[in-house]
Image (cartoon, rainbow, N blue to C red; front, side):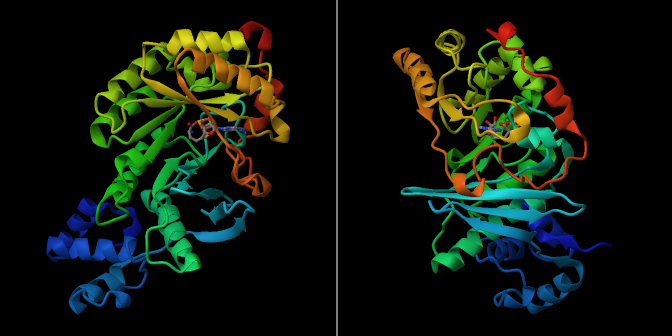
Length: 369
Ligand code: SAH
Ligand code: SF4
């Protein structure tokens, strides 16, 4: 039997594994705490764990994070790690410190199959799903290396956002145990309200997440109408806006927060006119309790798109705010180290030539308004 990476188990999974080894379930809790709360990777460190169990584990299991290709620290304290996931693929995690919280942005896939027009991951195409162990490894490594750097035993990361590379709800089976490890009191003990899954709108999986592991939900909307959203987020052709909003409403019946966050990437002269802001108000008002998060587009050369000017972002926000919709404009963090949204893993190979297809199909602005 192949040796297993224990980072891939949530606590119930680890308990089942320990039982297979003929061990008591509570041993799994001890082991889980060593791994996630203390950052241990060596069974010999686990002093209160029965020697017999340590010996059993030594041949059969291991605790291994991802190889770090690079680490960049921004002037504003943002830290970006590039991790090797084999076969020429890399994924990134970004730590964003703020006064009252520390947020880690985590990747769920190498590349992404959704192919959004404005996203550099989308332009790279899809390589593969990350395993639960690879998703958890980003948090495991970041938390414990930050503690060492800051010389503290206190928790550093209080929030996780699944907003790195990839569409988390297209890697559902690996995602859910990773979320459970983040939430578990014996793991990272994060509040459900402080773990956010961001999705481009995989409707059936929004419903499953509501039942299996409700956490905060962010939905990447980016357009007030189907014809425009079809062009920006191709998944919209499968799950159009009306169905997506219904799924959001259902989600709220079980969600830890009483609103959905809608993300809206601000693209100059594509989706950022005051008229489009009014359409957005009509779409959302009195339909889904929500907050709007406007993200100024982070340009990359192959996109052929332009970031909305601050004046246009403010005018757009003003329409929403006047209509009573809570609206924030996302601050760009880590700009100097390319850690801003949609700029992740620039070095990853483009295996599918997705960017060529996209550049050949420019966004049809005239039709979209
Ligand atoms: N696949 C998920 C999560 C990863 S992307 C999703 O799409 O929601 C995280 C957020 O960054 C999404 O809202 C996405 O639309 C946004 N984003 C992607 N590329 C961007 C870019 N170039 N500029 C600004 N935001 C971008
Ligand atoms: Fe994938 Fe999200 Fe990028 Fe769209 S925005 S291509 S869903 S990672």
